[in-house]
Image 1 (cartoon, rainbow, N blue to C red):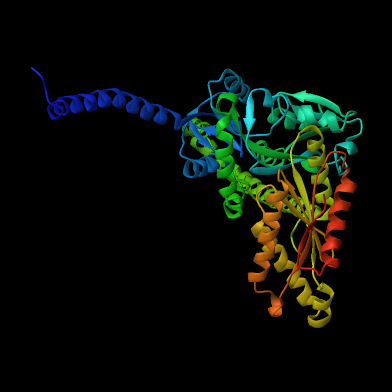
Image 2 (image 1 turned 180 degrees about the horizontal axis):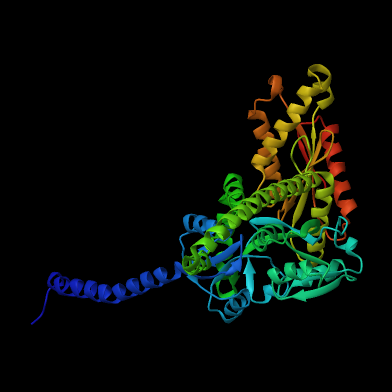
Length: 480
């Protein structure tokens, strides 16, 4: 029997559609399942590095836990935390590929063999700790032939010898062991993160120790992805760029004031009370005496806590004043050069971009002459506020002198830095300054290039600034 073309289509078309659905449905389901699997990442953490990161009663906590919440909001990924007993176990599992990533660590040549890193998103100083009788130390070079404790496996163990080859380094198994060794006189100085050291000194009640200096090697904490997941780095870099300065500051403020509350164990007291019931009179006498002693001790302890609090506040104020300009609260010239030295050493080892901006407030002398120096000071403070709103986490801004400012933009190319400088100019146009002053700036821009010295790099940015001023001010000039 022969079928017409119309009759054929009635049989053939449904047959083809059925075959397509049978083939495409499993493929679609497979792709959907694969996408679902990709959206969960295995995260390994440092179980004992508070306040940066820790595991307490099986719960992930610390600064890293706050950023994990932000990354869960800013990316389509959820995170499955794989608990480990030590940082060594964490690094072993990263090398073995059991984990997809870890949240907070510095990059180093050794770690880059098995990890790919995002942009840095959390910065912190490294400080020197010693007993109170050792004079203030400006940097590692001031330690001399004293022994310097560094934790095994920390990247400082690799980087300090590069900058200070004569340092007398003594390896310790942990930060706690290093601080105890200084307290007991086994080593002279310990180096580590300001935030974790401050917390440990409080927990261990090491009253003989003090923060006695800082080093120019700064913590620049990043996300480390195993090599099979390095394609995720650009996505997480975008997420890092979306984290606001307010969110960074909120996290830092919450975890920089961590206090550990110890619960008193009354078990011994109850045993003594049960035994004393057999000799009530003796117990009563001892109770009265003990109460008086405890009252005296409590009063003394309160006095000691007040002294300790005062010393801690004084140390924090001294540290802040050492790093910052007292008028604008930006970094000062000394700190900027220290940070630039560290970045320059990194640029000498790696192929990456960095840019320096030199900024001058146009006709600032006229503001002082017409409105007075008090108004001029307020304008400087307001300019610093506007400048900080356009910078990113990781950028370093400092008052260079008078009405001149300088900014270091790490891992930034020419187009990105030009965009940032343009945002600053626009933000100044929209800001209401003291006494309705219309403030403009001239900006000189210079990108690091091979063969530069620190001096030549800064001088090139300064020359570009003078070109901007010569061409009428209120403009941006770049000198290659």
